[in-house]
Length: 442
Figure: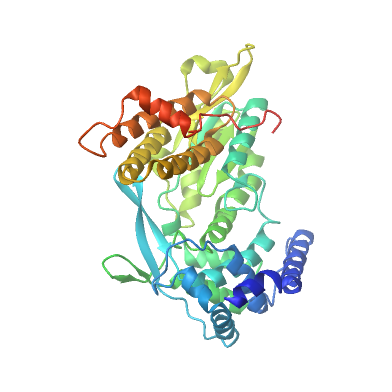
């Protein structure tokens, strides 16, 4: 326990040393785009793992060894020293990844891989090193799994690009099971473009090849893919699409277009905008072949060309991206503007999840329910509270309150209160009303 406190106060100099190393890597990566980094494996030392410990989510589920972060912390010094020793002596072995299925909506699930705490620490440390290198290479069109660059920034930049430039067609695309189909050989080749360190490459390969154990206790040794949930997976996924999609679009597609072309990608979700129909059609025809080269497949039913022009607003065309519906409209002053609202699919999904939450928490004390409710509303408004989306926010709020009213009245055979009493109670507990949080100047 003492060591846990000590690492937060007594290793400041060592932390600065790690940050200095990463800063040097970033600077070198920025100055020389062809430099291949060596001796990165040596950075995986005790100080690096201490820094990684600070950054991992301590409330996450335990891995296959069932050791939680709280239990790991009890012997933090010894545990980190053991991991460091195994890395130094090349004894480190990636443990099995525990797979759970997370509900996705429409009776579908998304597989989530949960590594052990020890694997998370080493993955976090390696992810920091790779981020220091590749953040200098990634293009501005790419969002998601990047420091200080989130979905809202992607939405705002896409809105601005469509609003003030000459685009008339949108290609929306969906990659089938992206994380499950990443080709290991291609990924290693991509990493080796910048990393000339066989020990670090072997370490990454161990995580890619680590067995996955599911609820039926079957162990699967994957030949392709990287588990969603692994701390290393996001940066590996970004590296993969950086080479497979981003650079291709920037260096091959855009120069061959007759008019403007724009790519906006968040993780494996992306949309492309074109001025001319022929450019959009040519891209649409070649996109599948390009991704297929890297073992990826497009979902045909979710990949489309959409006419999207301020001069064709009467066609009422729109597209969805990152939970928002984009369409052309007219402002109160009569100007053409891009209007954004919560997508119908996401609104239905959010309300369905809220219904499940009400059912599971209705028997809690009212103060606890309202505190959790405000926390949920606050998160929802923080994401969807963009200018022009107040109507959708209010719709979510009113339906959510109706659902809550219904389930609170099912706590016993007698009805707890009528609607008037319920609204007064919610006001007394200070339930948050819908609010637009985006600043007009951002």
